[in-house]
Length: 219
Image (cartoon, rainbow, N blue to C red; front, side, top):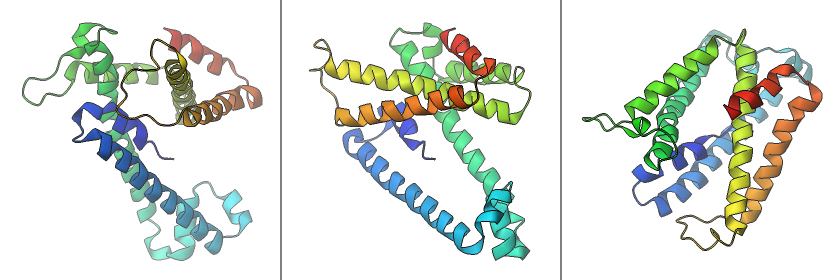
C-alpha cells in the first residue's frame, strides 16, 4: 500500500514550496501506485487461475514462473529492493517524528539535537534504532512482528485522525492558519477505515498480544 503521505508530512519543513509540492506529491504518487497495483492484479489474473493464486505463498514469484520462467529468480531481488526502499523511507522519517516533538518541547530536548555537519537528527535516529532492536527481542516470528507493527501504526493513525477532527471543530484551534487544509470529511473517512483495521484483528483473532500493544503504546 502507499505510505508516502506519512513521509511527506514528516519532512514538511524540508520541502521547497510545500503548499504546492506536497499536494502534487500526493496526487502524482497515489496515481502511480494505484496504476501499478491495478496493472499487477490484471496481470496476475490473466496469467494465473484463481486456484493458483490462492495456493501460492508468493504470488509475484509464481507469476514470474508462469510468464518468464528463465527470469523468475529476479522477483525475490525486486521484493528485497522494495523492502529496502520502504525501510529507507521509514528510517528517513522516523527520526523526524521524534525530532520535531522534541523541538517543540513535547519530548526531552536531547532528541532535538542534530549532527553538526550533515544536520541530521542523530540522537532521534539513534533512539529509533535502539528501540526497534529492543522490540525484536520480544517477537518470535516475522509474522508476529508484522502484526504488531501494523496494529501499532493503525492505533496511532486513529489517534492522529481523532486529534485532527477535534482541532478542526474546537473553537480554540479551528481558525488557526493551516498551510494545507483538506476537507474534514476526508479525516472522518480515514478515521472509520483505521478503526476498521484496528477492530478487525481484535474481533477475528483476539489475542493477548494485541491487548499488550495498548500497554506498550501507553508507555
